[in-house]
Image 1: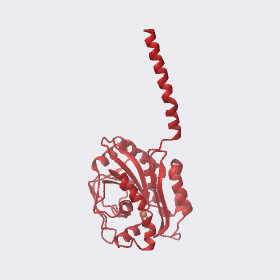
Image 2: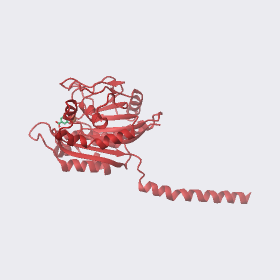
Image 3: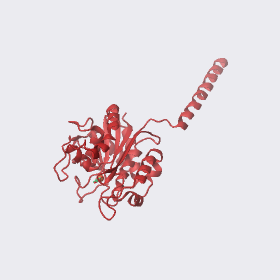
Image 4: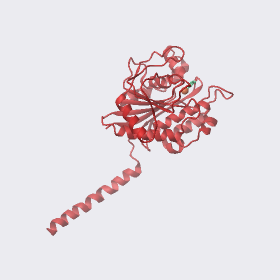
Length: 311
Ligand code: DHB
Ligand code: FE
């Protein structure tokens, strides 16, 4: 069976992509940003996921403002990089996993999540920048990647709770896929930023750091945060953070935070990044298992012995 083993969340600042494409990764400004992902690259190279599900947002590249699906799942075999105004980024074509993607679509839709099925789509910096941060700049991305685009560009985006619950539905779908696949879910976008208007340039590190803390330790409480609080505390584009809840909902309640990185600024935003692993046994469950195991075994033996005596 397939299973989700970890979550990887990071900002997707377009200027990070431009720094890579223009050979500026060694400039001190950008080195500070990229150095924060060295450990992450090692981590993912060791974990070697079979498939990545990348929750990201399209910035009016694939969909335009004429058609804005709330949740759009990429079921195609390939997703070429989009032209965002300077020609497509020189990054590999994203290869999908139509089998698992169609399975997720079926399972999630029958569970009540009316996903838009996308059989042809180009992907923008929202997806390609986090791929660079995780995998560097290889000739081919190392595994199939299923894009899941979330609307955060036009009001109303989905709530954090809805995103979290979609993560839960994805987790259920993955768990019922018959192939043995180890899946990592990416959450992308954020952190606090506002691109335009009187508050342009807003960054709120206190909010960002608390968001990272609660993502690990209080995921359900965090997912209940209303839109207005993102607007007030994290700026208009801070709402991109709702996508991180899809990733978190796809993970266990208790997770191990294996890595975190935060730096300010990169372009107009803070760069936040966190890696969470599944597989932590909760203390309560472990204690229950310990308690119940010998108790269950003991009466069985007795009753067998009694049964023999009686015979
Ligand atoms: C910036 C950040 C984003 O997430 C984005 O989509 C566009 C611009 C920025 O920091 O400039
Ligand atoms: Fe963005």
